[in-house]
Length: 86
Image (cartoon, rainbow, N blue to C red; front, side, top):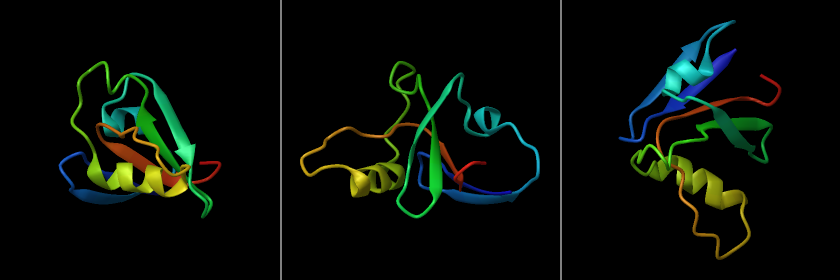
């Protein structure tokens, strides 16, 4: 499984691992996420806002690209992107 990590500071990492703990990779206590239109899934920390994580500009851009116009929600903290179903 290829995992694309986008850190809140803009740094990106690519990990090739069969079995990994996505929550641990992004420092999440509970996972949530959203599907992109290209068969990828973005995993986020469900408690990122409560933890006052910084805005992840790149992940927010991905999120807004699939939302209806006028959406203002921001993605915070590190995210992991995998093929859907991973």
